[in-house]
Length: 70
Image 1 (cartoon, helix red, strand yellow):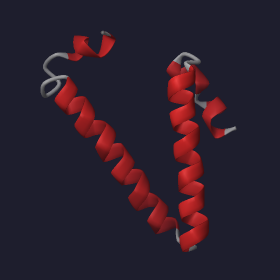
Image 2 (cartoon, helix red, strand yellow):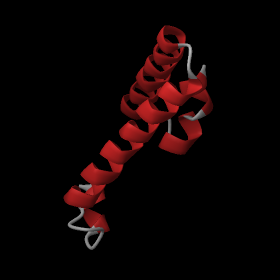
Image 3 (cartoon, one colour):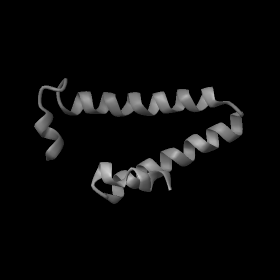
Image 4 (tube, helix red, strand yellow):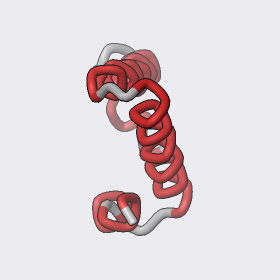
């Protein structure tokens, strides 16, 4: 359900929706296993940092954003 709320943001593409859905399940599991919202926040921050780092490398320091289209 969480992933489907974000469907419009990713143009209803299945790949990103599966990723968002998987991450949401992982965050729920982390919360349930640790009984801590803070643990979920740390996992979410690590996930976001990984995406940011990959984007930074892929676009050569955000100088070549057109590389994202191809």
